[in-house]
Image 1: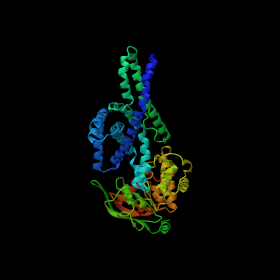
Image 2 (image 1 turned 90 degrees about the vertical axis):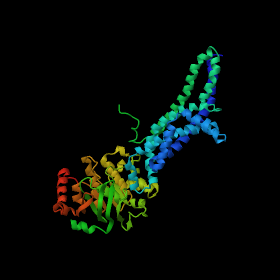
Image 3 (image 1 turned 120 degrees about the horizontal axis):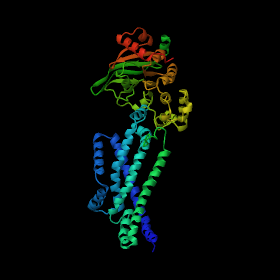
Image 4 (image 1 turned 60 degrees about the vertical axis):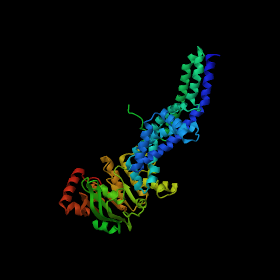
Length: 236
Length: 261
């Protein structure tokens, strides 16, 4: 077998593992987005005790490494529940709840970046608070949130590599880890292939972050409005 | 002229009774009482920090007064059971810094109240909004966003936004104070037209030319209360309070009164 053939033999399983990573990524984004939005509104418009609760949540999840959160959920909490929970769900919940802590900060910041006069003008027309939030605050906050949210997206794509510690869940990184030992035993050609193999693994993640960010900047451009385009740009 | 003005004024549309408002230790309004008649243009003047803007905000409850009552016709706005959104929809408010909705173009800014508050069908709302934009001379700016408009244009759009709701009265909170001097005229012109067209309005302003030209009555406020109220002729020629005269002389010196005609 040529080096290329051996390499391909090991790379192809990465494609089989890709859906697992994608599924966890998709689910964790949904969890993070939903919970993050709720937390952001609670902090921006909620009463003091509720706000304090949200701040506590954020500090908790932002202070623990993602790998530890996953271990905590998978090896600590799930067994204690006594009911079997699929690894994919645990992975998405662990990383999603962690991401919610970051996303809520992004959304809260975006909501608070909308000038207070906007709410006042909306109320002066006779809109209720809810109406004003829906038709005036959210459309503006949403646009302001896209660039920082793109950062968070890149960050969680990379966090998904940590789910390899969940037993039975064969994601990209887990799959690659499983191939390393057999490769290193195929001397000398196999050992030389480890570096290119890991580079290819990196490229998988790079494609996910890059592709996602491309879609997000497309969205940003589609929604762009004069006066909102300066965010994230620096005067040169 | 004043007699002629008096005669076109209708019944009392707004009654403000003993309004008090305190921010922390600061008592900004110390019992303000006045009446506004249908078709009247009332200009509120006075040194800064005397509660003029707070007074306007307390009228439509953007700030909730600590004490005192406000009636719009026979509805007590300050009553706990009054639907404040319903009342606000009948009172236009023009802000010093415009507060146009930044994510909407001029036409959408003017129509949003009709769509969301009045629940008007989209086409009717847009047609009405176009009319109001034309009325302030900005028909061709319908698709421009606030960031693309000059200050004077923004303020005219915001006046159109208030007008579209068919308000019973409009409150203007220093509508020209944030504008470059050369842009003040276009806004005042719109306001003068409104006043002469019989719109009921309360205008907080330092534009003495405007006050002289169209005010039916001028209120002079200082230290959270009304010091004096009268027709422009009364206040400009023989004010009852020494302070009013002093203030008017100073403000005329500072701003002149070339604008407004």
